[in-house]
Length: 595
Ligand SMILES: Cc1cc2nc3c(=O)[nH]c(=O)nc-3n(C[C@H](O)[C@H](O)[C@H](O)COP(=O)(O)OP(=O)(O)OC[C@H]3O[C@@H](n4cnc5c(N)ncnc54)[C@H](O)[C@@H]3O)c2cc1C
Image (cartoon, rainbow, N blue to C red):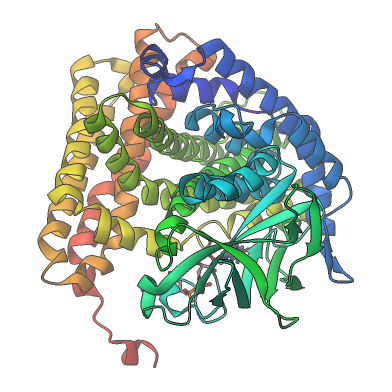
């Protein structure tokens, strides 16, 4: 079953939820118009369907391999990557100064969905390169920018992100990789990084590693971490490639999913002299720079959740139309009914669609705010948008990747036994999706970030303003009084009220009892995602109603929004109770829990 980019759904979300018309009118997405955006998405969809999708299942079977110290990606990947770079897809959002196309974040985010729906193992390579480009562009010296950005933007060199070490995962304060300053101002790095995505491969002629390390006299903890650019091959003064740097891939991990994406153990300074590196930003302020990369990457990983959910939904829908079992309530003849006619399968498919579209909406609103934060003329508007990006990024990452796993799991279920058998492809989505809540900061860490750092932003005003915005849409839905909206308005009112109450509880608890606030973090984030996702889908329904939604695709936004509000957002009040009572319910101490 070939992937088809959901161009209509994406355009509808861009217009009704991300406010595309307003962004275009105010010049916040550059010179581009709606027709061009649609054309870019359609072309990306064609590339995804024709070039990347056919490589996904064979790539999963074959995996990347470490042969004589070098990583080889599956057959066909190098050619596909070269076509990807030649098509200009590596540089959509990069600045024109470095050869990029300066397209808005909303377009790059949508393109990311398409690459990852078509082939998640492939999509990770450009995802990390884009993050590295952002970090170098923001904090690299003029010479680093001149030397590295044009090649990375052109897709000729790729980028990686090297944070994790065996004893330092979520807690980066423990990292031990060392950097020693040289007389000429460069640095030599020594240490081991694990789990490095695309740490080595043959898709590009050079690989640019961004590596967190500690200087000898650095303060302990996160305030003593610096960021270095370490090329795989050294770059000569004239820009040509020189000798190999002292960095090698010492091993590849064997994983549950994304087999084609090489997950590498990287050794720096094994030969003795140390890997040559260049400081990015200031000494001991590396984590701040890495956060530039991580915030962009967190949204992109959220979009991977949407991507895998979309792909799993398409596959399940196609199977449910073909597979016949039993007779449905509406069956008349003797023939077995396609399973899509059974109420429980329709419920499953609607759940898949609704969760996918809600998560897409949350991610696209985050991307929209990124564009406003970059391009608005008014400084206050830029600052407000930046705060909203900060608030929404952990929700986009964690809600969208959690639902990516859930939707992929429902997809297996819709296939019955065949879902467990590899040949249908449903199992691959389930396996691939499982990494998403773990990397780029686990979803538990995202929830703690939301509760501990984002809710207190601007004295709590950022989140209360956001909830007030959600309530405005709820009131619009209620005032519209449309029969086909069912109880959407009431259910969303309850969901947003639950979010407001849970937010007040966290606000009152965080300072005096942080452990209780943290115990509530995961259900709080889920509640946030359900309320926000439900309201965004309702915006789509309102727009469809205004446009005189008829039958067929035009009516889908209303049906999906109503289902989300009446069947899924109803969990919100229960989640609010989990937030408020959650810590008290954790009655077992670590010792008794482990007995
Ligand atoms: C396939 C793959 C690709 C990856 N790619 C990269 C990459 O390119 N670059 C890179 O640097 N890293 C990469 N990683 C590493 C990834 O980011 C880490 O695995 C992740 O951040 C979690 O760290 P950890 O595995 O050490 O788990 P731990 O930090 O040991 O966490 C274990 C559990 O404890 C929880 N936990 C930890 N601390 C706390 C706390 N303070 N409060 C509450 N709960 C807590 C976590 O949420 C988690 O559930 C990759 C990992 C994988 C598997």
